[in-house]
Length: 343
Image 1: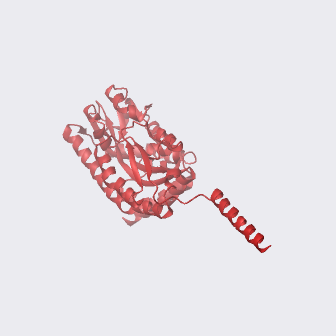
Image 2 (image 1 turned 45 degrees about the vertical axis):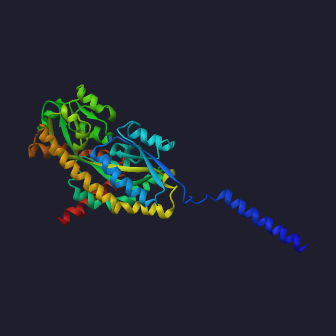
Image 3 (image 1 turned 135 degrees about the vertical axis):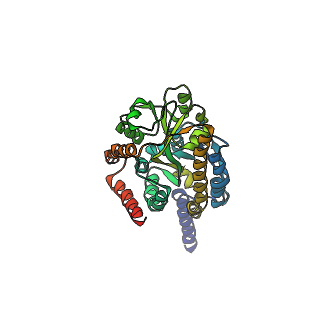
């Protein structure tokens, strides 16, 4: 009888162990190699791409205990930001480095950062970034993604082909590109401009074919895309802050151990800071290079700039409740008021 009970007890323990193996997901194998296929619109071999490889990619590999490797698809060959989101959802890509346009698919609430003239300087960005990370981390996770890095394109400028955009009253005469989403569309409409929608990979050819004759963009993109050969004028007003994002699918991020995940996110305070410093310097150098190339820098009259800010200010509240809750807008404005009171 005792032997029977011992045998039954052994069988029961074995059954419990087997059930635990079935119903409890195994922890990631520490020796498992993880290939991260990443899409980006950035052209290969330009400054951004080199900085990604030399700074962020190396930092992420080290933080993940050397278990990850990256295969990067540059220059939009895997599509645009919307395509990256779709391909991450079906595991064709595991990561993407995207412009803020991609956030309207994953996290439209992040559009609050790109409202016209809401942010005025990188000092303001650096003040609110650590305060806003927890909010955006949660929103991304709820949609099946991990926000690894929030960096930036630039404070974007206005470019035009044959005529300057230095007078507010002249803006409606231009055919402005729009590819950035509803915030850009509403901004242009507030300025009485009828936008021309074009997908991001098609913008250089649209400029060369003069389908459009003005656009809002970062200087580093104008240099990297070589569209400076057809653009004649730049108005360097900081019409919008344009964040950039490095995002993984949650499925890919969850293949890391909890310790490795924490180590990866900790690089926001190390290698990401180095990367941001590099890109900001590159943006400044790119704008200077455009002037040296022969692009004419046109300054907008302060009264026209004030009028532009007033005309676009209603966009902030128009989109509250559509892209982001009013509470989120109030949170950003509260942090900005706090920072500006310290100046």
